[in-house]
Image 1 (cartoon, helix red, strand yellow):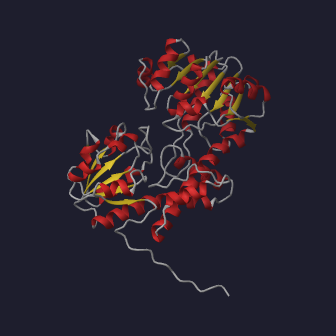
Image 2 (cartoon, helix red, strand yellow):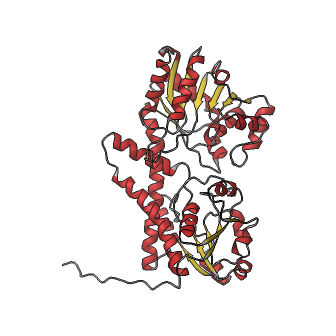
Image 3 (tube, helix red, strand yellow):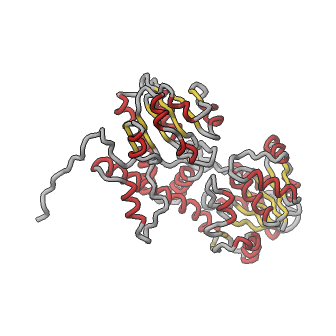
Length: 446
């Protein structure tokens, strides 16, 4: 099948490369000429394990090509995916200007029936908007169908998630268009759901908001554990053994970030407000997440007696391992607060340092993870990259001014850290140096 994908970010590039690997003839388009030139050389603009190999395979087999010409991408295509960014504005409202620009851009070149698929994460009603733009641009209604097909990719495992999806959601009232789109993904053998466009547009927001809620819930419980002397990992395990709850997304940490959770939670909040419903539960999910990071930094301040004049060594900058994405990464909040208080920061991340360097050129960037410990008053684990497991903590501690380790992902564990001589602090567990639990006596119920 002849397919075009407009947008070569995480979603668009992975979608296009995977569809090409399934045997479809795929054209990926983007307005960024430099990005397209690099893609033609086999260089990916994103960090995603396996993507460059998949691109090379598609190009070698003649199934994948790249262009900046929307006319070339649109003419002859049977299906065109819109996969451009929809970042949140300062107000939290998703910016869909790129989606609208694509709709206007492809309109003059729709010379045969075309299924236009919104792959971008968009507010409810965006399909109607794309439909209206195409018609306003003079495209006859019978020449196109607008379909919603939300993505559920995780950065770092995006190729696997595309090839092995939990489900494929298609939002349309047109049975022929639904059947055509399902044909594209038929080889994947995934469960499918066909629903109306509004429901499909909501499913992505709802799914990520629910997962964010699970994380905020266990993070709130981590605070209770710190106060009473409980352990949040054992608590989460006990909860997750209940099949009605499940173990996924019950891992406590310094807070969630990235490109999806913050944007999608805010998107659902905005959608709800626009419809006249105040989704107070989601507001609390956001508040708990922000407070989780603030609380972590406050514990660090307390242990060090403030951050002024102190030097922190940060391990990890990306919002999670196996990606270079720093959007809403918790590391940025730690860096910002340290600098505001007059502290120094030395950081290391395998792939994300160039992105952070653009924001904070004044901080120090280590060439090796061990270097962040040199002269540091505290070591702070922010991103649980697998390579950090092999670090010699004892040797790193010897290079520090104070042997203090704040583990924002419960990565090392108290036993290993303390055996290396560290004062160990982590999320959801009380340090041996912090005060004992204070129990409140309550009157028995009469």
